[in-house]
Length: 114
Ligand SMILES: [Cu+2]
Image 1 (cartoon, rainbow, N blue to C red):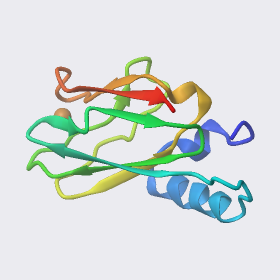
Image 2 (spheres, helix red, strand yellow):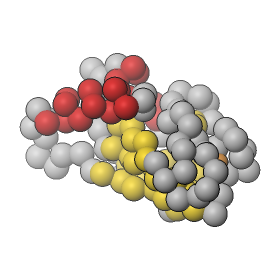
Image 3 (tube, rainbow, N blue to C red):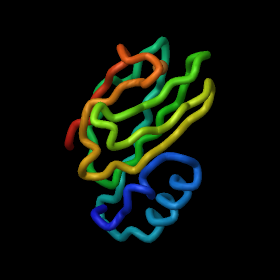
């Protein structure tokens, strides 16, 4: 995980493809875990997820307006997730934080270390 660049974990589609390509070569016994977060009714569901570095999180926007998932400290940001779309990122060690939606700052959620 430490060799992964910040650029690789940012979540434009190219970065996700890069991250997935890295993932195919991983030999860790446990392996990364996939986490799904639904954005529904102006909430992240589930609001708290427990993760480890190397895991991948995919946010799916089930609302009719765009949202983002953006670290409070701005270390990572999915960018705009349009209605019905998904974006993913690979979790780095410095990604464990609270996050929010840039368009609706009252929407908050949290990543905690497994
Ligand atoms: Cu939002």
